[in-house]
Length: 180
Image (cartoon, rainbow, N blue to C red; front, side, top):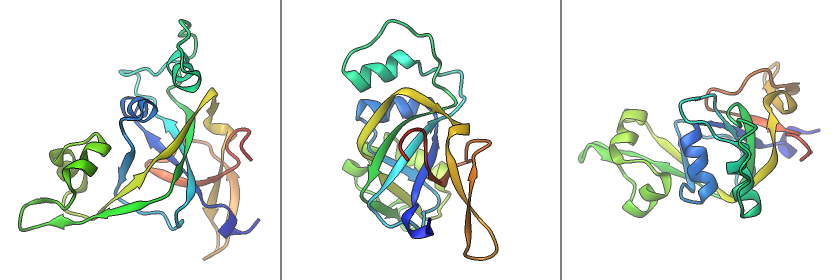
């Protein structure tokens, strides 16, 4: 497989933001780094282990099927819960004259963050907004061990390895769950 054909990414996202993504309220994910992939590509969403905000399988079922199942028998924290299409990546520059990021109010609302959140997170560095479209929740969330990542090996060569842990922010992936 060539590197050019495998450009999907896996995001690690806190449960409260995963819930907002599944609800369709959060449609832009902000990160400090930009991947080399050119839109359009797939983004997979890993729900972190923040147990102060559990995300149950019945919540996922509600978004996947349009109805909830009153069976919170599977905590989806620590699992890949959905994938989406990323058609656009915005760049948000620091505006030193106004001491804020150059992002309009409508776009900021789509991030479910405040200008203060961006300032604390970005600390004056350029930020990137990944637009999340066509979010597809999984009826059976995937364990991280079932995903594959592309790791650098000797300059430009990339090798395919299984993931042992979730990425700090994001990583390149291929073959998540049954989507290969």
